[in-house]
Structure formats: structure tokens, C-alpha cells
Length: 148
Image 1 (spheres, rainbow, N blue to C red):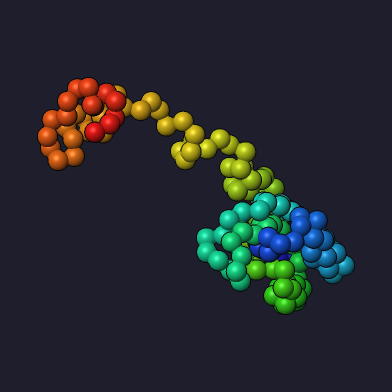
Image 2 (cartoon, rainbow, N blue to C red; image 1 turned 120 degrees about the vertical axis):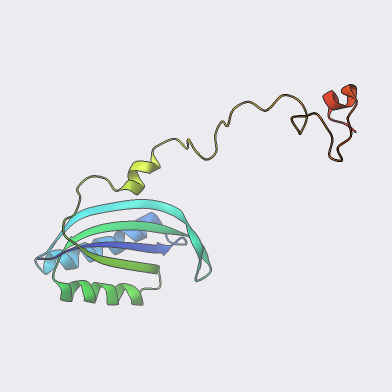
């Protein structure tokens, strides 16, 4: 049977249990047809790149399916009719990687590049030369206080 990876985004108004119920329904359909769900990952509530149907966030879920193409088309049709599903993408793949996806592996890491400690603040005023905005020298006593 062919292998597919499906990512779906559900509205942020619904709970994680409701998202799990939708995914359980998909898994039941696949297993009833003789296929299997090889991978199932809940990526959490994440910000969307742009608003979709007045939503700024969504519940992301990844599924690795082994199913017939007719069943996958039917599942896509049913999910497109479901008002709780904002977006859906299904791709046919050669293999389903059993390791955690990059989204999950990156989720636990510290934010090294963004946020966090960026190092000590530079000593002195705003500019390295100690000059003010207009190019004039600032008095030493005002430069230390930061007042003008």
C-alpha cells in the first residue's frame, strides 16, 4: 500500500481532546480499510503565518498513513467539510520516518538565536565615539547619566 504524510491544522477554539477525536476517527477509517497509522504527532497550538478564517493560531497534527489512495481522497474530502479543520496537506512519500519530526525535536531545545541572553550591553553612550545625535560632543557628566 502507498504511504502518505498528512498535516492538518485545526481551529484554536477547540480543545486538544477534540483534535485527538478527529484523528482517532481518521485512524479508525484507515484501519477498517486494512491500512495502518504508522506515525502520529501532535505539534501543539502554534501561531499561523497569516490569518485563516479569522484564526491566528491552530492545533497542528502530523499523521503517517499506509492506505489506499481512494481512502485518502475520501478522508481529505471529509476533513475539508469539517469546520474545525482550517488547512490540510497530504503528500505521498516513499518512506515514513519513525524518528520524531524536526518540529518536535526543535520544540524542546532552548531558543539560542532568538530571545534569551544576548550578551552585555556596550559601555558608554549610544554611539561608540561618544558623540551625540547631531555630532556635537556631549559633556561627560551628561553622558554618564543618560540625561540631556
